[in-house]
Length: 168
Ligand SMILES: CC(C)(COP(=O)(O)OP(=O)(O)OC[C@H]1O[C@@H](n2cnc3c(N)ncnc32)[C@H](O)[C@@H]1OP(=O)(O)O)[C@@H](O)C(=O)NCCC(=O)NCCS
Image (cartoon, rainbow, N blue to C red; front, top):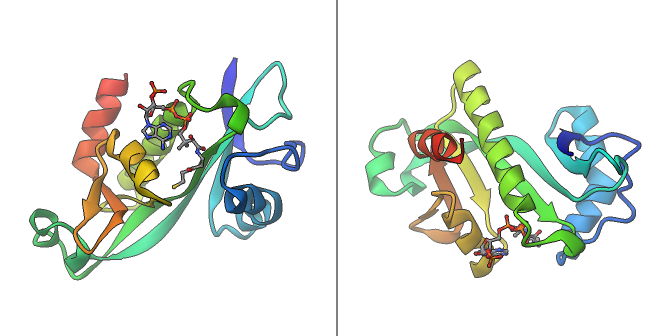
């Protein structure tokens, strides 16, 4: 059975490879330190039959948004700076890509973001895509590009809630 859990010492970080070396390095060298310092939270997708093996991971953190950078219809709703959640990393092991594991983690990240919004107040969910292909991946979930930088994407809370309802 697939499970999502907070990154811990027993997870085999050394063996993880996706197609982006900086993401592999982040998982190996930085993610646990940042968990411990409270800078971000990295969650791991595992199969309970092989609980050490990392199938994928995602990292959540908070950020401050300069709201004038948002698409106009959102920009006018908010003060000039506002808090938000950020998907700081997302990766699936090279051997397990395109089996829906990215989607499972995205839905979990969105659920966690909604829970944060209900407890501390944030305007939405942000991600910086590495390239056009990653941007297209995020657009499937309702993320929209910022006008000044199409690789920076924003998922408004209202869209996030609807997307989660659809995901069931
Ligand atoms: C991007 C990534 C997280 C997607 O996870 P995944 O488990 O492979 O993708 P899913 O199975 O959830 O979804 C796949 C579907 O999304 C769509 N898609 C659009 N852009 C895509 C992309 N860049 N990569 C994979 N799928 C993409 C496809 O339609 C695909 O469906 P198909 O297999 O029927 O063609 C994963 O491929 C990965 O880790 N890539 C390397 C690291 C990376 O680029 N991370 C994002 C950094 S910003």
